[in-house]
Image (tube, rainbow, N blue to C red; front, side, top):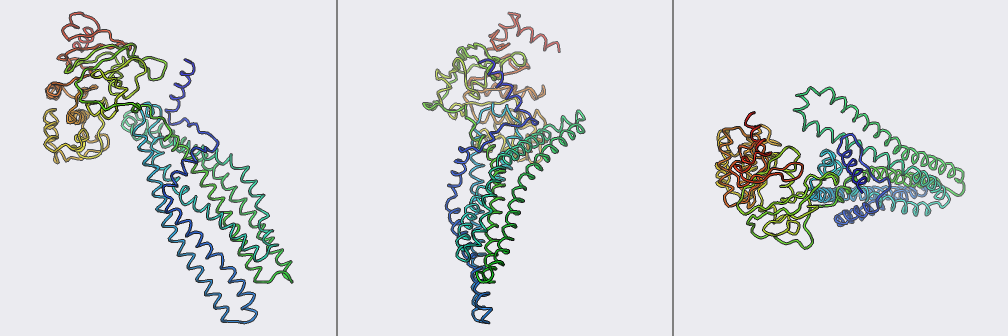
Length: 601
């Protein structure tokens, strides 16, 4: 069992690289095909109407050669101008009807395609919102992004227009065969003799074609992941003068993608080439045999009509080959999309989960152990009892398990061993919404969203008034720098908070947490990027906020946690010391050594 977990760990580590291809089943998934059908069913009204209009348009087009045959065999020999003009008029009407119905059909297909894009992207994004941290920890974010936008765009046409065209082309073949046999059974038989040869070729090449486009999908995903990673890390790139090395990597990934794309195109083009070749051979045979039978079995008008129908017969065959190529390409993308939607949501409400009532803040950890990879334990038999209104500081060396404790309290990960309770209620048995809505969580990454300063603060309480936003900012001390900006609270913030300092970003993130008015407060390195002067303002706000609330504070700067009710020292996943600042200093244990070391720095 341990060896299996180690293999799974290595697989996850390898997957979280931009230059490692992801595995996909080489066979077409029937489950994914059923998913496609469900999305098509949602747009069934537009698709059904488009299908009907396509049938009518094609029937209007297919009667045209009959008018040509009659004109050539009857009107021209008899010099019947009236009949000739009548046939020309009927031919023109059939063409106009076909074009008009086709135009309306295209609009309906476009609407269906837009609807399918929306539904797939909405379901995918909705699922991504629910996936646990482990999903994002195990793969580059660029490989996730490429599935939400480019891949969904790529498959929309195949699922809407492609399916409609497939049905239409099949019906076209049936209709054309009917008209051909009506004109000349012998020449019609010659026309369809090439189909078995083409079908055998298509069946033979299908596996290679699918594998080729899956490889293209892998290389596209790798390239996108590297581009996003490079953009996110551009400051580090420039700081370490890595531009030339990055360009070498970019060139390699691009060449790999282009090579696989060319290979896939080569295989796909063999389908088109074979179809065209077979169709031209059959087309030639129809004219040769038609000329041979011209007297007395075939007339000139019949030969023209059969030539037209033969061309029309093989045109949908060629179109089907192109649709097949498009569909094979789309399926390689659909596999990515549906595999993401199929990712299990491991952090979710239990079937018998209940709504958490008003939280008082009594927190208990009972024999809690936890491992991220199933092999190495980050926490080992953690036990402590936090009373309502207490402020508990968690300190210790990097990697000791401090953040893991608050992550389990917030249920960002499932508890594997032991039990975490709030007010005597197991957090695994309450709804996530009712649990997290009563928590104020400030993580190490002070992430800000695109928008204004007020928008980012209001993220903690969507219905917050302008006065509530200003009050929270004053409490934290963020108003000091906000009011100095030309647009104040309406100042635009770029992605990830570009344009303001790291300390200012943390102050805004802290204000966002405060405005949510939590019952349990979690601060993970909340003051790590704030200067000493600003820290004094923040500490005053923290003390105000912590009144009447249970608080958990992770800090490396030990001077910020001296007034906490208790301080808990974590090392190697275990609690090695717990007590007040004075008690721990008197013991002269690990906390004492940490404090002395920091004071000497």
